[in-house]
Each structure stands twice: as structure tokens, then as C-alpha cells.
Length: 194
Image 1 (cartoon, rainbow, N blue to C red):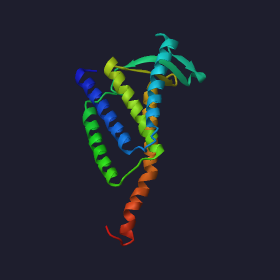
Image 2: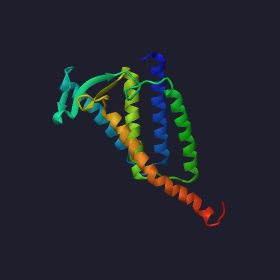
Image 3: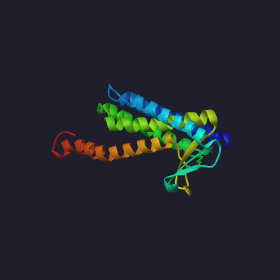
């Protein structure tokens, strides 16, 4: 990866981490559990990478469950998920600006996030932050989980944590957004003030 793409990746990781952290600080309940989830992601990601390095010791990957699960040690110099894009920073800025606008709307509505949303954001923050820090200090990310002998991607715990967080937030949004829209439309439908 050339220097400009590396800088974009580091800045994007820092911006997304800061935005997620801001959401958690602002909207999580008083007795928040997100710091524990965040710490667990860091511990599990870094601990599993250390364990895999000891297990594999630079050799060929080990396969388990009839070849369905592989464990190896791979260095990933790409931006993420097997690809590199010169538009990463631009996409990140659009997302962060959209997140800032969303937070303004949520502040107006005195929003307090649910435990499920808090967990999803904490998993996403843990994954993004670990990847950003590892890439900043090493120049690469260590991947080690391979699903199948001929898998196109190799993952790490931070990747899986971020994907799980996105999945939780997506499902939460699919259930919460219709209720929010209905609540917004209710006064108008009833002939009340707009």
C-alpha cells in the first residue's frame, strides 16, 4: 500500500473510532457496559493473535472440523476486507458528517440508546479501533481465521467483531426505525399539530 493510502486508512480509522466513541459517550445509559465490551474485543483480538503466532510459528495453516476452519498467520497490508480504495477517506468523511447530523437529531429527541444498540456500537468500535491502531503501529493487520481451505478472505477477531456490531445495528435499525417513523407521523395522522 502506498503512503497516501496508508495515511487515508489511519485517518479513516481514527475518525470512525472517534465518531463511535462520541455516540457511546453521548447516548449510552448511565450504567453503560460498552467499556467492558470494548476491552473484551481488544483482549480477545490481541490474545488470539498471540496464541495463533505461537501455534503456527510461521508454518502452514492448521485446519480443523474437516477443513472447514483454518488457523494461520497472515499479514494484511490492504485497507480492509481484501481491497484498497483511494476513496476511503472521502467515504469516511461522508459517513462521519451523516453521523454528526444524526446525533443532532437524536439530541433533540432526548434519545437514550438501548443495551442492544450499545453492544453493537461497542463491538464495532472495538473492531475498528484495534484494526486502526494495529495498522498504524505495524503497517499491517494480522489475520488468522480462514473459513474453508479455499476461502477468499482471512479474518481476525476484530473483523468479526466489527461485522457482528454492524449486523446488530442493522437489525436494531430495522426494528426501531419503523416505530420512530410511526411515532413521528402519529400526531399528523390524528390531525394534531405538526
